[in-house]
Picture 1: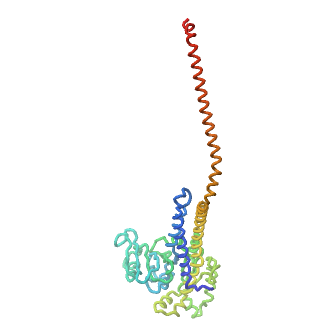
Picture 2: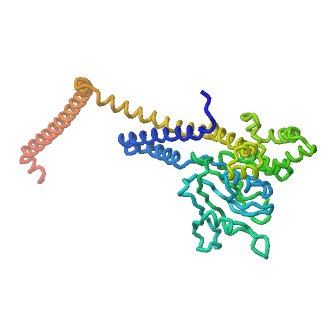
Picture 3: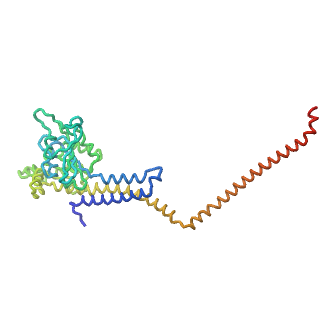
Length: 404
């Protein structure tokens, strides 16, 4: 049966929950057997299972959104959210890393984390409403204002369907941002499951972008999604007879497909063409045709498929292998204890009799040795007594001679 991509996250979540239940049952068995108490050396199985449980409870599928400050990141993220939440202008606007996690409508909120010494209420994070967000994070380039953000990151808890089943979006600080110098984007790249690398259609494959892509690949990350933004400009160019969409896409595929391993998994080579502004307007106005034409849904479906079928499966398999290793140790322990408990009285008595004979022989030998020692002591004592008696009997006759 072919699985609809819309419920892939749900299937992944169900499998993770099932594995979590198995791990919790395994932990209860290990505890009941007191395996950690008995084991004195090596890795304790109870600790292994507890670590797996914690990982299953807290682990998320993380997606990093990367791009130069002019690549249209904010509008792209807003199109995923479905409303204009992050400020978007032609100049660098935020300089703040944003982590987006799912929350129900009634629990949606924004938490700001100030840089050291720059918070209004000390260095402690604080909550604000979504309506206030732009006032806090937008960088003012005029009136001599500071051009570096006062905040190192923000957490956005939002009813975003893309994040509903354990997915976390990380909107990075714009690469080569002239105002915000926070060098944290590449650090996050080392621990994420997918990277969406945004490039402006009018400047696709620039030297700066290619250098960054090369750097990402050098740290081991080759599964890159390339998101070509401002695709409405390409459509306009095609209408003007300057360059067809097909010709443009062929050039992009030729230049970028060798730079991502997704070309082996995805018929589109992991390269997506998006009109983020049209997608955002379509979602705000609930215009399904605009959303469909924008290309944003294709990004979401391909990302969903990759996360669940490739990264999610790999994570679950790693956990399952560790759990299977613990299970083998548990089976050995249970089998040994069952074997002991099921031995009959006759078998136990037989084992006792088999062991008693050599013990009796050793005991007899011990007694013999003890008797021999006692006999030798008695003989020596008797000989000493006889010698002393003979000496004292002869002593009176020897006294005159001794006197002379």
